[in-house]
Length: 282
Image 1 (tube, helix red, strand yellow):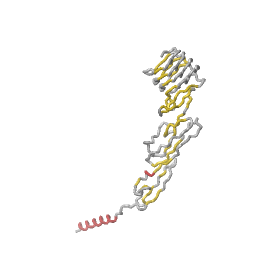
Image 2: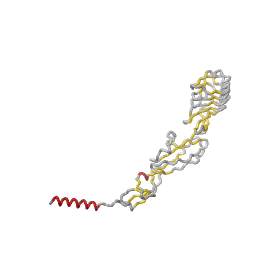
Image 3: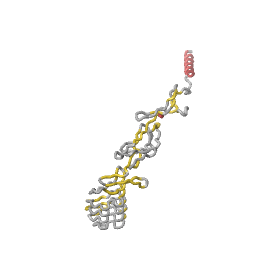
Image 4: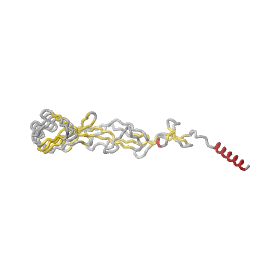
């Protein structure tokens, strides 16, 4: 008898607990959380709603769509013009900063412009060593993107370099040198941009140039009359291993060279009388 009473008591307690359980929350009472703009110092949030009973979170546009609190967070994306110190002009078409929802991709802005420079993309560091990928990288924190600028013209060790577009790729061309340049030092790259050709007449009749001459491995072509009449060179001429062509009269009357070295396995294509009047051979 005692066992029967105990069983009945347990069943009563179970039934009571079942009927006393709260019904599922209908989320009828929702508190509105307005949007807060993200700043350089602090994240913000999109507008969302929170159930006052169960404290679950819901989309502001679709009130039935449940979301996580983390998904409401927004972060500021700041664009830094990162202008070269030697350029005084103002950057045009500079994009404005914006807030992006955590986990979202950034809309790639139009490219800014700057006089005497070419825009080279957006980077996550001011030294422009880490390019930002707008197609893959999602926002997970406050982010500053730095503009990379490539100078249209540069002078290094008295040598003049000019930027040009080679089928969508920025490269430098050697244009000449100052009148007081004596030792010619040619660079293979400038700020990561390759030097790939020597212009026509670049050093024509620069008789003050002396010593040896090395054409960098990055150079693929030497223009017409490039070193025409440079009689002051008095040591070895070394042609880099990427030079594919040398223009007409490029080293005409460079009578001081003592030796010619081709670094490449295949000699470049030579124009007319490239070495006419030189002691060195073809």
